[in-house]
Length: 344
Image (cartoon, rainbow, N blue to C red; front, side, top):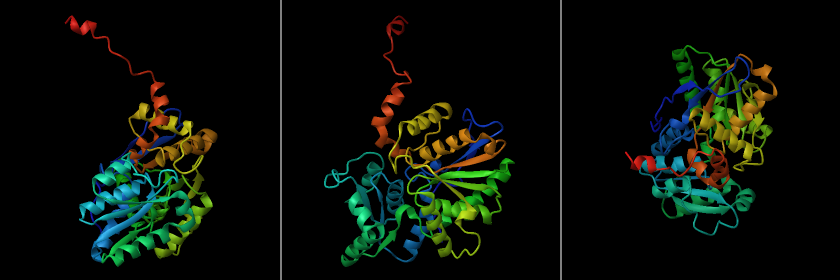
């Protein structure tokens, strides 16, 4: 059972980035265009998860993530579409957790659609864990007479994986229409569900493409183990995670912590192609992919690479202070001389 929440299929087009290895073609699948408020990869998972919530007659939704979680924002919007109140457990810094969370980025949308924000500190999140925090709020709301539906971090459950199992079928249809055969599928990896669905889906759809997952948090070993668990829950008894995809470390200084060179990649891609990357997921992933290409161009020579842009534009607003000097450095803002216009 599935609700149609996203604007699907999302387009695939050639991505003319400069300085690629000889003969390498880069294409992009625009899952950032899956819907304005719902944009990104999360809507694909929510189509299945919220259909399950409604089918089981739940009357509200709980999910959990970082203070600028794209998944939390998408869940809040999608739940509101369906008339389900949404509760978000969001981790914030210890110095800010007791105050109003503000209206920057994803928070603006979440609060406009009426989601209830439950803030916890990063330390509390690390020591207690997402599952126990979710269970505690579920218990609290149940005691109030509600029937909450809990969605794990990133919507990354076995059911959520169906979003990208379906996306792999979509890619198979689109590459046939385009007359292309992609050698590599690449995307950011943050909570496992997108990668699990894409990697298994690529195999089941017969895409014949290598799948590369760029981890923006934790390390490759963690994701192999997590995705092996998801595959088991899906009932898959074939090849394990390490055979289905290759994980790369792309977290840099840490989750949602941006380095200047990563943001410079985001800026350069925007100026060159008009495609805006979020700094937490696709920005880090593309930065690492391009670094891999520069480090070993022969490995990528002649390959057609499809990069899945997983959205998250609203997270950009949390990086304004870091982006400001890069944008100012372009020197493309000035006071217009209106004297000539006055003479017309």
